[in-house]
Structure formats: C-alpha cells, structure tokens
View 1 (cartoon, helix red, strand yellow):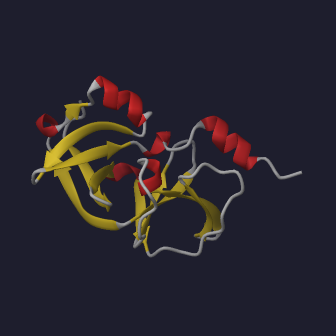
View 2 (cartoon, rainbow, N blue to C red):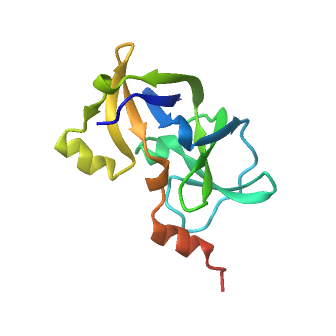
Length: 150
C-alpha cells in the first residue's frame, strides 16, 4: 500500500481519480488535438504543448468509459523523459490521502485495471482510484507511435 500520498484529485464521469503530485507537471485548458490513426480508443491524439507534439489520453476511455466532456488537460510525467496530457472532465483539488486510507485492489479488479491504477481509497464516501501515469502507455506502444509513417 502507498504511504501518505499527495494527489491531484480529478473527476471522470462518476469516478474520482488521484494522480500522485510528483507525476503532475501542470494543468491547463484543453488545446486542439489531432487524431492519430490506428491508436487505441483512449488516445485522443496529439496536441502541441510547450512547442512540441504531446500525446493526449482520455481519462474516461482509459478507465473503460465513454468519452466525457473535457475541461482540463493535466500534463504528466510518464517516465523515460516522456510527457503526456491526460484529458479530464474536471480537476478538483490537491490533497494528501493518508496511508491507512489506501486499500489493495481486489484480485479481480486488479486484473481488470491492467496496471492503470494501483490502489483505491475512500474520500468523502467516494472511491478514489490511484493512477500510475508511467503505465498509461506501454513501451512497445511508444516505440510504434515514434516510427514515421511509410
């Protein structure tokens, strides 16, 4: 279980998600996004952020839901010097969730989560899913998308 974690709390549909603050670079208004052919459904496309192309992922789709209304992009560190933007319905607050509040995922849920989130907690009688930005996109997918089109 994680210890005390400072998390950015976000909403996607009826779900609350928390992203560890050390993975968050900034939040911003959504920017124009160009679709990427043959990308998984959770990939909204590419946006130019801070002068460079940035992969934009839809949090709702990442969680297996329908696309939702987007009000913010959350720029995240996805590991190996890679950054991506998470398109979210709403950014709510930055909050510390105490270690004892975190629970391990039940085995069936752990398989369904496919590594997108690590733990769950309750916050004001709602579940919060602790996300892991480094596992949103596999290394193989990054390599595939980095190859130029023939």
